[in-house]
Amino acid sequence: MSSIEEFLQRTRDRDITLADTTPNSIAMSTRIRLARNVADYRFPKWLTEQEELEIERQVRHALMDTYQELNHFALSDIAPLARHVLVEKHLISPHFMKQKSGDLLVSEDETMSIMVNEEDHLRIQCLATGLQLQETYERASKVDQVLEQQVTYAFDEKLGYLTSCPTNVGTGLRASVMLHLPALTMTNRMNIIAQTMLRLGIVVRGIYGEGSNSLGNIYQVSNQVTLGKSEVTILTELQEVVEKVIESELQARQALVKNSALMMEDQVYRALGVLTHARILTSDEAATNLSRLRLGIDMKLIDLPIKAVNQCISCMQPGFLQYYDGQTLPANDRDILRAKLVRETLQQAI
Amino acid sequence: MLCEHCQQREAVITISQKYQSGQDHHYCEICANQLYPFTAQIKKEPISIQQLLTNWQAPKERTSPKTCETCGMTYAQFTHTGRFGCPKCYATFASQLPKILRPIQADLQHVGHMPSAMKNEYSIKKKIEELRNKMQTAVQEERFEDAATLRDEARELESQLGGDY
Ligand SMILES: [Zn+2]
Ligand SMILES: [Zn+2]
Image (tube, rainbow over all chains, first blue to last red):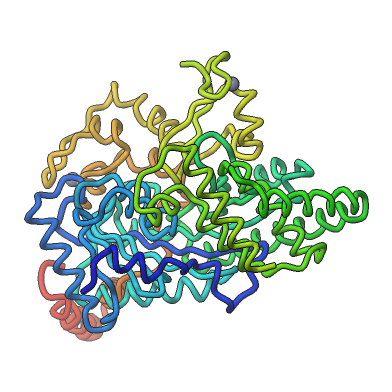
């Protein structure tokens, strides 16, 4: 069993969006989360230390045979900066990050993580690159089925899986897709789309950004309802909505090219100029320019591997920057380091 | 509170940074629209838990439901945190559930996946119910031998459930 430090060193260049298997230009990644609780225990917030340990032991034991390669870390052994990196990698939640105790099980390829004693006893999470709702759900569901062989879940025929918060009760399923939507954002179409989605029970959030800005034109689209709809319905509805949004984004891009091709090309190359030459780069500026570059690659205005952009997006985050620099940095120093990393990554790719 | 961006106007919109810091940010409407052109437009966000809580809190004054025997949680505590204390809370506060769940969920009946152990139990219970209905009909139609057979079948199934059904 290796330490969290060793794990984060091994997985330094690993990001879900860097996988080659599926095109991930607009739909960057897919995430499935299942909330589960063990019967006859109070929810984690009200557990004694002894009970917490019992549950953690039960869960590890139940998964041991099927998932031998899982890394196991006690949250109390993870330092604040390392926790920050885990949040940025979407392996733990910001809520979990702030807790005193809890357990984290994570697969070596980072496509599966299980938080034990977060808000619920179990948060099973699977990640994938691109848009892969069905496949990712099936992987999470398999973990669920392995667990239920040995753990008795808190389940009610009427209400489904019982969770600490009533917004998760029923299926306990939250499915989300991360979307890069620069053209819809530029043409102010997101508002209308948001209203429509909301009526369909689908919620959109800006995902990215340190401090005060909604950055990088990246949005997180996820289902709201967990009770009264089956998993299949939830996934199908989300899939349909996401496909429609992608289609609208593509149309908006075509319109932009038609009406202002030179302006777009100009923006893309200005972005490249800033990213490959700046010495100080705030996360706002980095995200805005990386989004333009990404759009330029998609529209074939510039020839660069999208992987390099994804790599920048992952390494420019504050936790990541500081962790791999080995220290907590003031914002100014972070901006200098960010500029250096982005510059180096892109220059290597050109 | 003043808007943390312009420091001039009153902050009226709260933005939760879900994936980065987990912190809330408070902006005036103008800054929020600029910084979060997308999120800030969703004024009627159905999942804002704070919003829901105010809805739940309102009737709390009038009715005071009981305390959960398993975890000791009161309904007032629940409305304060928006979180139940244990799975049994759902049964304890069953009468409050429709007003909590209706605004945020599609229906009050789970229709999704079940643990396989439950799935068996559930289908057995369904079958027992069916047999009992048939038994009733048989009794009404004075087919007592049929009724006895059906009763035996139901008992057989009940023994599989092992216990108090
Ligand atoms: Zn302001
Ligand atoms: Zn309770």
